[in-house]
Length: 161
Length: 351
Image (tube, rainbow over all chains, first blue to last red; front, top):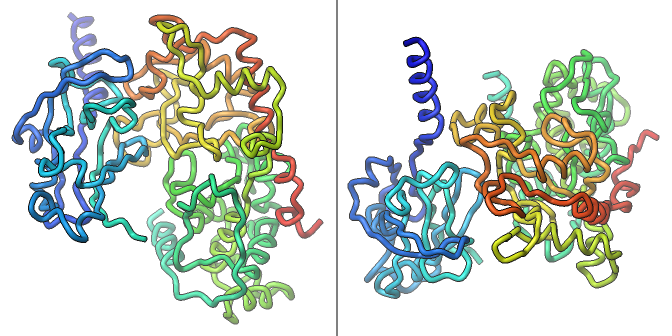
């Protein structure tokens, strides 16, 4: 009994350690700055895509289109994505310090049919330790270097030159 | 602690500075221009000179026996050769003294990234009871009473007073000039140096990710220690322990994913900066290579880069041969910048 209790406790502790709950901050050139929890993101429209990771094998990734998040924050997409807004970019940051950049035009459905998602599942399972809880998936790119994991911040900025 | 935090804020905010003669920073274009210089503290020749003197000034410590240069010695690429350093009280520090090279580009200082500027960073060793153990205001008072310093502060900042804020500003200015870009590897990148065959094999392994299914051997060091500056500003758990004694960045952020995470340091001058890791646990580069080759410890926060990163299918560590480890170390020797450790502009002006 005691053994069972200890095991149970250990499992609980282990799960607590692995379930890295974090919010995603959406900030910068937005009308509504957001702090999105996993529950908030769970309420948004789902999108599933199939893409190959570094292992070269196709996987099913499920998540939310990045544009859905940006629209909720009031980022200039669609009809507003013209003029000076064409020099805006999205900088995505990871908890480990890694950063990758997308221009707004390469995300927007008015410009491209490619849908970049913020995934929380791969092949029907939560993302593995270290890569979750959220990871950007960019279908159709030869290198997955922009598949940034452990996303913590999405910052929209003007390029300054 | 709260007092220190408030002081840090006060010092870093600051007034519009007096402008002396601009200090021209020279570095390769490949290093990029994403530098970290706070708007309130542009580099001037006078500020850098003052900062150099202060870096080696023992009056900044409570017992007048320790300077920044005590634990950051130029001949060891500004480290001290010890696992942990001892300050005024003889009590060892919590972590290994980091090398001071190419800090101009760093955004988050210390092993856990808790300071966002060199100005803020300097306050910790200056004031920590077991390091230099003296409040900047007391240091300022001691310097005010000296013959030399009032004139140097006037030249650097245009003020007749000396403040703690100006002390850390001058130190930061000097540290930003500590640029290392003259190693054989830099000359190789410039087409001016031909490495021997062992170093070339080591470089190939360093830059290549292992892929046993395609019979590609590699060590993938460059994934985190790549680019001309030989680091990417990341915080990773590199598998030293399953349950780390020092929780690293987690202590700073409170986030479980940060457990056992530390800064990815530059590998510039790595042959000079033993012992290695945040706790100086490895005395030699051979031990470091042995760790990555055969002893990666799993944990929930282990870097994904070090998972499934092996030269054997299904392996949990790199599994490099002894010869491959030697070749990588031969490459690491090319990162030693002798001009950096002998540059008179960085040396102790009191000698």
